[in-house]
Length: 253
Ligand code: ADP
Image (tube, rainbow, N blue to C red; front, side, top):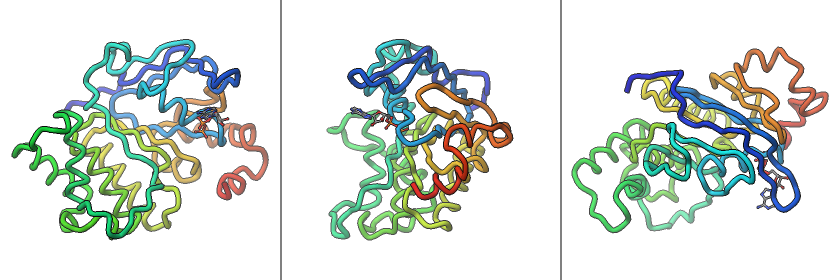
């Protein structure tokens, strides 16, 4: 895939959203380009998850619109271009009777529908996805027997098996140790730099993501900042958003 940093993958245009009469997002305009590695950050309750749901068409904004790959979301059909990695909040029973390979195979069904047999090409996609996340040798293990970090890699492989152009990740490093976190971020850099996959990462871990991503979008009802992490750190944004001792407050959250 040739990469075009000017090509819009997701356009959020003047989007506002309220739950009942509580306004959560106000007039958000944001473009995400092919090849971006962007993190959505901001205080708890700032609207990150809500915006993610709007971008995926799960909830509809009261104002504004979303375009995916240049098409209005209502007309967009090629959902297999989008991959999703959930929060690491699932605690599998160690005996949960599903293997790593079976979890990754689920990533192929977006394109095919659930009742189709997987063909040779799908099997190759599954093998490739496992190899990309270095989990090939765990393919026949039960998912519940793996560590948190390994399970996360399997969920990335599941997203990769559908051959997406963009992957959304929702707070992927909650509750994992530092070493696992480092390995996880180097895997994400590999997906972005070597495989040209656009990454959109919701994170509360500002300290970490500013060193990893190429762009930050900071939400606190409005879009407070969108641009390079460096400029964000130089500006007064942290203190404005989180108050003094921002880092400590955020780490304890
Ligand atoms: P973030 O992901 O930045 O923490 P959210 O988008 O989850 O923020 O939440 C934004 C605000 O919307 C919060 O005040 C939250 O309590 C509220 N909220 C989220 N989901 C719902 C819902 N389903 N119904 C009502 N209020 C909600």
